[in-house]
Structure formats: structure tokens, C-alpha cells
Length: 201
Image (cartoon, helix red, strand yellow):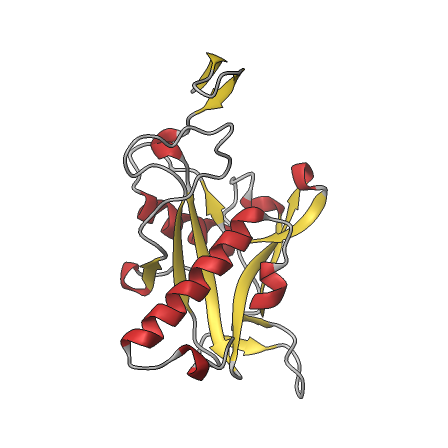
């Protein structure tokens, strides 16, 4: 849905409204060797200049809830099926990707962020013998859904250090990493730990 006209800010422009105000982002992660690793897709995105690293994400299909979108995007873009109980919501508030152009004024609208933890070495493994520079899923391959135009432009899914992911030029990835870090520190505080004891930081 697009609207054009005088904005409440006092200038004219285009305002875009997506179903439910936006889509969902899911952050796959692993904690191994006292390091937080984030699962990123190597994907062809012409609007970002070619191949980029970013988190699995997408818009809602008709009738979908944000959670269902996150679960579906994980499956379609990586081939990995994740059961509902493993997926955790990151933050109470949805995000507006571009407040100048996107309308997320209705309650609960905006981009929602989720996370799913994978375990090493049961589900993922390091790609080097003595020095781990990335982790990959045990199958060492991804199987994006055929017929999905976005998924078919995905070349790989690997786990990179959170600092690498946080420095991605993709703003959804930056936001996902930030929300995950905040959530991990909150979860550890609930268990009686302090931020100083969280070695991954």
C-alpha cells in the first residue's frame, strides 16, 4: 500500500505500508569457544551492490503471524527446519526499518526479530582444524527452497563472529545482532550472572 501527499511532518512524500507493517528477521547463533557466532547468508542483492552477508528474513505471507514468517524464512532460505519451541523473540518492540518512508503506526506493527540457538558440535562444526574461523551446519550445505526467487540467490550459510556480523552494511543484520546481545545479557542476569562473567563479549 502506497500513499502520496502532504505528510504530518510538513512535507510531501511517499509512505509505504507493508502487511502488518513489516516482516520478520531470524538470528541463528552458536556459542562456542567462548565466542558468539551469528549465522549469515551469502546472498545476491543487487540493491546492496552484489553479494552480501545478511540474516534470514522476509515479509509476511497472507494470514501469517510474524513468528510463522521467521520460521518459514529459516526453512526456505537455509533448508533448516526449526521447531517452534526453539525460537525466541528478541525484544518487546518491533522495529521500523525506515521511519521516513514506512508506516508502522498501528499497534504491534513493524519488523519483528527472533533468534534460534544451534549447538556445537552436535549441529554445527568448525571449518578449520586448529583455528576455527567459521562454523557451518553439520550437513555442510544448505538447500534453499526451489521456486523461491530470494532463496535461490543464496550461496552459503556460515556462522561468523558477532563482531563480523555487527559490522555488516545490512541494517537488519546490525539490529538483529544488537538485540541478540541485549537478550543474552538479560538471560544471563536472570540466571544470577553479571555482565563481567559473560565471556562472549
